[in-house]
Image 1 (tube, rainbow, N blue to C red):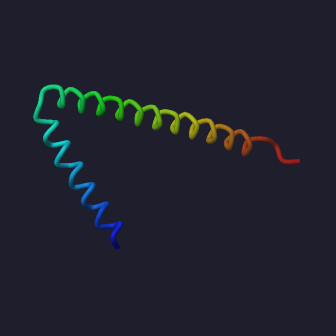
Image 2 (cartoon, rainbow, N blue to C red):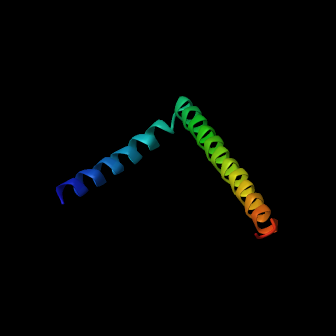
Amino acid sequence: MKSILWFTVGVAAGFVVAHQVNQTKQGRDFFSSVDAKARAFGNAIAEGYHERDAELRRAAEAADAAPAN
């Protein structure tokens, strides 16, 4: 129970600090940079997922089209 309290206090303190940092020009630039990198990472993950999904679907279609012995 004590660890949940400390976790909650830490999260709240993190939000307060992030809000204060975001009030400065350098802070906004920093968070914009982090946001852009996170979006690029997410897009790369999604692109890789869709490519692999297409590969697996093509392989499954090829296996279904192959004559059965």
